[in-house]
Length: 438
Image 1 (cartoon, rainbow, N blue to C red):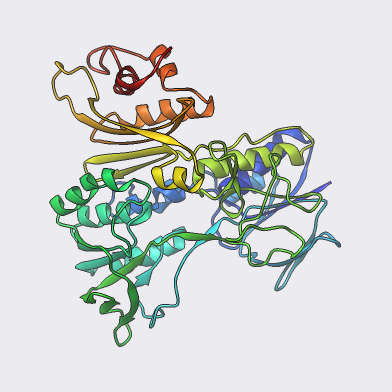
Image 2 (cartoon, rainbow, N blue to C red; image 1 turned 45 degrees about the horizontal axis):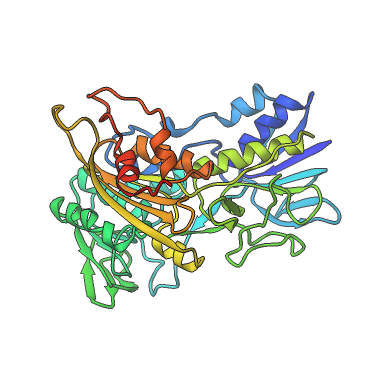
């Protein structure tokens, strides 16, 4: 049995390791288009201001470790250009590899629209270690940096660039930053950006760039922005352009997979940012590219390729973000998503404390909870605060995974001591105030 895996990062190598653990002396070939395997992409922004000293610190296992310790034929600089699913052969410009079972784990690529003069030097995206090295080289001399996009990466980059002593302009096409939040929750984010001297340009569309050889201006619908460096962080798209036409894909190009990570073609699997992700709240396929999901889907794919029976139960849409002194946590549905699904819901908002109100250094938590209008099933939560967001968002993620109702929160046996919580957790206060128990 010959196992071939396209992609040497989170999903791909999680799968490879499960095959190693469950198949005696497996024949595994991995094809990675770069020279780097198995690294933490989500840590890349924090190299900019030195919080993480080097990109080397992000590498979990080296190529040599996979080769020498696990006997994986881990190849580098192998970019796949085509798959023949009938002949069961993977092709590149100068190689071909036959397979019995194939995993596609090629991740996603940063989006770059057809902006005028986008080829100018000094315009960067951030997804890989080589891209970060190129950014660090240009960033050393830059005084002003323009970040295009106010999502997760854009906000993180605004923070680390400011911490590195740069003047940052954050350009957002829409009317708010942090689109994972509802409009009535985002004011804290806007005020924090202002407090940290980040220049925010909302309702501003980028159309191109100016400069002789290196970017000097960002051309927008609201005028030109003088800059030394540009970071485009407007999102990603699944890296699936090479995929065989027989493999079904969603509208955005993500490979459609079932609970076993099986594609529409027998013995071909997909996992991670190049695949769909089943959303347990929506009860349908979704696309939420996150490292946690990639590792989980890779594990499930590897187990099934090894002959085990494993199911990916899905995601509930949990994410968390640090933006200067605040933490932003979301899980489940926001109002936009609930309306799109025609789900009847009610909204409960509450300002609570992260610990007991009488304990020193108590900090507020802004909580917004969506609950099904008829069943009281929790649909989603957004939380913003300086401290304590992470533990609450994980509690709600667990509640969502178990289809809990608002009143069910009152029965949770959550940890309590004044330095860590109030006798009733802030989430339970939402339930106490609003639950309609018969």
